[in-house]
Image (cartoon, rainbow, N blue to C red; front, side, top):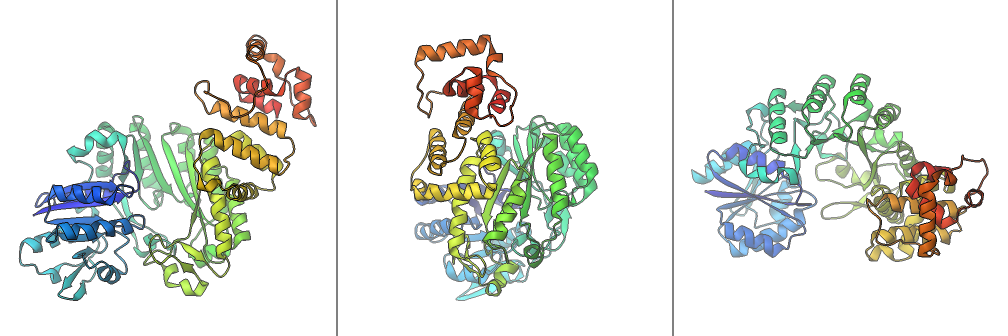
Length: 558
């Protein structure tokens, strides 16, 4: 029996850990191939490739981001390969499984929950007596009836073979994100998350984990992303793993999901002293700083301890931090979310991701949707459309904010300019991003693409439209950010330059020979114009001088 296990990833750079776990467990007894595509691949291209491979069974790993595209592939596959068996698995179909069996009549089987043992037993029955009622964790059809078998007991992780030792993966290891798990399960009960459904945490043997990581590093892996829900739940385990990775990283980057408010001081001290800069990245789910909200979703969180961790990690300058927020949680209205946003932004994360609540199948919040008057999309990704405290109009406004947050802050195109604006010209970071997002949509820019220069001209247009004070300072900082964003001299500048070529050359010569002429201490109350006049330099030359002379000159100018 030939089996193809497939998934539609968000991007080509992602490697499916789930498929590799299934293949590793069953390949000794069955002919199993992996086939990975993206959700942007044309459906007919995917179908054609699967058709040419030929298979007795094709399985698909299903998530909220790929289920609808996967259904399109399945429906066409069954038309051109009517005898092929279709198998689904993954978090999206492990809950409300009968719904999926009824909605997609072309599906023959669904594996619910962990799939290694269930898939192997299913394939054994398909080649044997076809007694599917012996296969725990399986949904199948018996005539017109859908049969859901009881769940399968959790596997001992140390009985599962490694999914990281396939020879065919080696050529692409350096080009892909390698997903890695050292444990399964989550100790917390957050009602918006599927991980809360599985009770307890199970670990792989730590020596086996180290061996697999060393193998991946030696074979060329450049980015390993740990998918453990809380990597640091066990202090001693996390500290031992951090030490091991620091001693053996060889330039590989490691990304973790951590719970910041339980990170122990001794672990933070060790990382601050020993972590090589850029080797670790932390993803921290804050979600909300509103205490009533956290209590309703059963999310235990001490924001003061979380802040201590984030600040200490940031002070070390060695680890980038990605902080997550969720808009739309119970009792989180527009105003309380404004406070949540500002609370978290004040921590200065390198990246702040604003997501919107998704009513995932199987979660407590989906079951309690009526309690909070939630409306949400009927199909994946099940994003909320409103609640009793957050109407759709507010969600639309937050979407505008999220758009410019991604384009500007998370892309790090204008860091110096944005920090100045949020500290000096707007009441808060939230108010800056919201006002800019509203203006962006009002101009219709969300309907068209943009180049790097457009990010500068559009921000400048927004600031001019509101008569922002001290535009001379802002313009100087924008020029500085523009130059710092280029490794080489940019092909063009986005602002109007009144200088002639010979004037520009003269200023550059002066700057090279006497840089002290364009560096003055900060003078309380002095405007950008006063600084320029006192140094005898024009505004345009000052912008160029600041960029050439470095950040300190720009700070003096501001």
